[in-house]
Image (cartoon, rainbow, N blue to C red; front, side):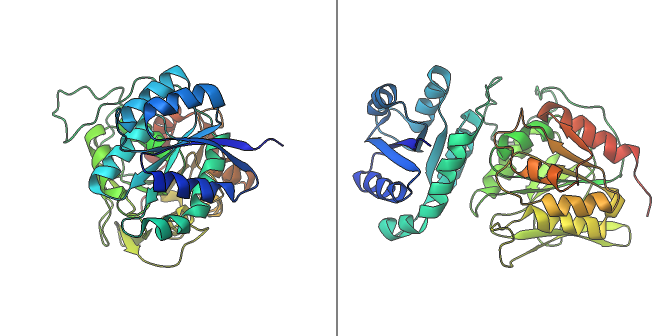
Amino acid sequence: MSKIRVLIVDDSALMRQILTKLLSQDPEIEVVGAAPDPYVAWDKIKLLQPNVVTLDVEMPRMDGLTFLEKLMLARPTPVVMVSSLTGRGAETTLRALELGAVDFVTKPSFDVAQGTLQLGQELIEKVKIAAGAALRGKRGVRPIVPSRPGPTASKGPLLRSVRSTARVIAIGASTGGTEAIAEVLSALPADAPGIVIVQHMPAGFTTSFANRLNGLCKMRVKEAQDGDRILTGQVLLAPGDFHMRVVRSGSQDSVRVFSAPPVNRFRPSVDVLFNSCADQLGCNCVGVILTGMGNDGARGMRALHDAGGPTIAQDEATSVVFGMPKEAIAHGGVDQVLPIDRIAEAALEAAIGNAVAT
């Protein structure tokens, strides 16, 4: 089996050295080169033909986003971003995912050498995931929208207005999920049933992601806070590094946001959300599992399915990584397997078509 060939692109000589050392520890990975800026990187990509590129978000001579966009147009290559954990870094990283990057890792804020060494396993895992990821052609990159657009703004295709307080829709995703979630939510009307989402993402990024989604969608999107009610027309996104579960009290549904050990190595965990939906909502929740590596969400989706909730998984052809959907299907908890552009309509129909009054 041939090794995964990696090119490291970072303007910091220290970071290039550290990343090379980290990745070289894995026998399945070979660092074939390093570049201090996009111009040198482009020459090395043509010469060395790497399977994966790691890319800093802020680069000299040409910014990383411009380079990423040009790379995806001229020579699509799996890219893992290496991002700083700042407000600006989060926005730039989300834009990079929008442009086609597979995933990202965060640079430490203080002790760069020691902190980055602690991220070694995450980096290795994400490089391996990227090497096997399916790159999707971009059908037009969405613009960054800094605030909620007015009523006349073009929002793309939207499903019919539903004006219903029917079932809750619960969504789980990981690698590739930021764009998959955006595609699903942007197709839903402003009065769609309440939605709760777990996207594997560290603290510091979910606030920016929620704000970005809020600008793209007719529904209101916010980072969840403990005690938030699940309301028609509102999407609650689990905050990074916190689990989220749903709680039913009488006819009111709300979320609990809490700190607890990771589940399936993740916090937030899709299984935590889905299991709570099965326990608290049963047939009044529609479960949707999207692209991602691993098996988080598979058991929870089976529990939700067994409780009578309709369940939907993204298909392999449109998944960046067909890990989580595949595991959910294998566990017997999936009713429908659909391409990403059909999931919003199917989830909405399931939510408004079979709601059970409680």
